[in-house]
Length: 276
Image (tube, rainbow, N blue to C red):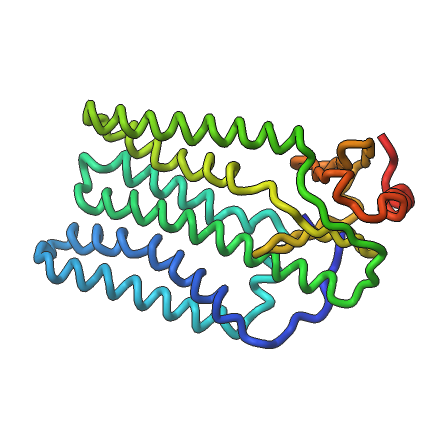
């Protein structure tokens, strides 16, 4: 996202939220290996291992927050690339490795598994924050062409609810079966799967789209996304929905009935995108 647009000069104001969340993420990732290393060196006292765990978390989180808080350009640069999703992927692999090593690492494997799940959530948060900061930078000094506010089309809403409900239902049943028959893998898998269904059930609300000279910005309640015109392939408009197809990724869908000035929106898109 955003490779086709350039950012303006980055704001020099501090960004403690991004630094703090990034620091907590790195602390969760690095703390279990420190405990494992100490165990291999012969440290077996519970109090010492606990202090090492807490100390690593605090030191890494504080240090990273201090470094990144005064460097907002880092978040902006990360948000301009798909590498912003890499921390999430690393956390998933980290949690899987922790689960796979339970038989050999014991409590460290348990820590790695649960810390990996928490790191996944923090990785998602850093990705969204970086994306929002990049969007703010790239749209700061560009002219607005038009904007509209609309929810998803009714058909897309139904599909989202059906898929999200199915995932959440399967995860709930899987967790219950795993608990009854003491199948740890099924319980853990269901715990990871359930949030995906919940996210689908809770999304799909009204969004604001802002068309600018550089591209299309999507404003959500807690996030902003930017798509350069080069990243968008075409659009299709009918009585039910406006669908903007991306070259990579899912299409952007809006309910036509919610758009105040359909003619202006269609003219803006027609000037920059082919009509399907």
